[in-house]
Every structure is written in structure tokens, then in C-alpha cells.
Length: 67
View 1 (cartoon, rainbow, N blue to C red):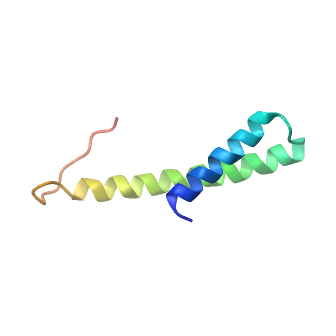
View 2 (view 1 turned 90 degrees about the vertical axis):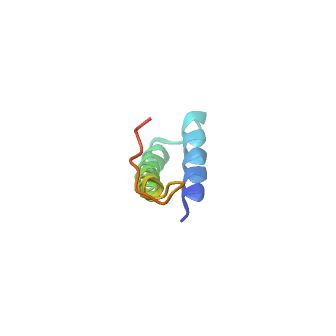
View 3 (view 1 turned 60 degrees about the horizontal axis):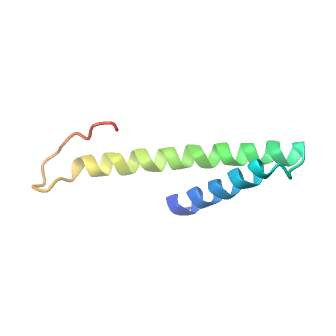
């Protein structure tokens, strides 16, 4: 899945969990899926950050500072 798809699915899961309408089993399954998606998003963002660090206006390597 793409980052945007994972993020949208994660937002949907969070909204369902916050609604209070899920059973305990559904909550646990949703939490597990959400955790996996969050890990994937984190990995994708790290990969993107590394790619951006390599690209600057003049083509030289530049470090990005953490925000």
C-alpha cells in the first residue's frame, strides 16, 4: 500500500475505535492492524526523509534537521 492509503486506513481505524461501538475483540484486532499501519507509515516517512536529504537545490547532500 502507498503511504496515503495506509494513513487513510489508520485514520478510519482510529475513528472507529474512538466511536466506542466496537466489541473488545474488534478493538484488539483494530489496534493490532493500526499498529502495523503506523509502523509502515513510520518506515515510509523515514525513507522519504532520507531521499529528501539527498536532494537539494544544487544537488549536494544536505542533512535535514528533526522537527
